[in-house]
Image (cartoon, rainbow, N blue to C red; front, side):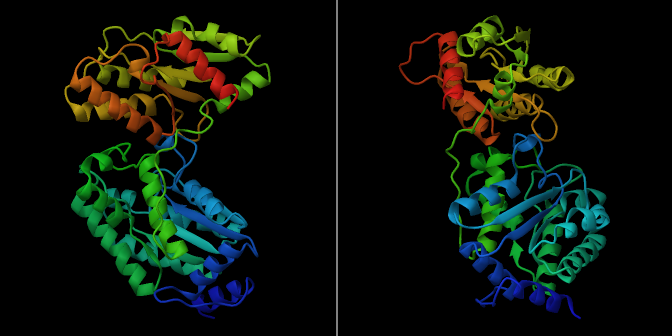
Length: 409
């Protein structure tokens, strides 16, 4: 029996098929069932570190979780289960080695496949082509439809030159055409953003190859557009939800809380926490910043935070921490926070204090960098403590009020 025949028989269990131009019967049927909520639809997102949940997006979600939440919002009666099967460092060869236990065991109706950046680093483009064909055939033979995604666009690095990533993306497009697989062209969509708005592109990337949460919303839009059959736009203006969820859970259980805090918050974090959570047992570990530039703080974070396994990290990078240009400012701002998070799924809370909480900006450069921080922090899915225009409260008062707002949202 052909793989496509198996796909059709599996999906007939969900009901009759309806066809639209440029869609496979399987995908159209999945779309109908999602919209109607008549049956559960299982979606597995299969890929590498860009798919998995890691610190690049804040450790709570990546594009699979964004897709899950967007479908739930768009179709409140739907029953969509999204399984994230992304693993850092994996190539298509690694993917084939775990496809049974990580993908097919879930008996998915739909599998999104997004590999390539590690295949690029390994350098075998023909093996990449062969593996993609085999992945698609295995998924379809098991009764699942596939959406094949190109690897996202990147900045130039020795291991992943832009031209080489583009060549691998073209292979993914060719395989999609060869096998009549729906294509989500992440490389084209993020590449178009880079050409259209270079700053927004830069602020959508955690590093040269990994998108942050803002970038993952663009990836989710691209894949959702294929699932839904029309263009999707997801907002970027929402602050991080439940920024102290892990800390609050410990406080509610009357467990001790360990806080790593930069000045001046190391001096009053315990007092503020006790004011909002009477009886809390709080230990504050100071994180000295005096005389350190942003690049040094970035390296310091990489060695300091994870060995401590804190419950809460308070980042208050002083204005006096210099950077040579805007790119270094963006990079260090992102990486001080990245290095303050656990490597995979979030294990502790991290919050960023906007410099205006401690001191006002001096000159246009500092005002512009204040603007950048307000764009960067939400894109990392991290809580931001900021000062409203005209608010004359002290830093301690602002911090205490912010704690109170998170305790009673």
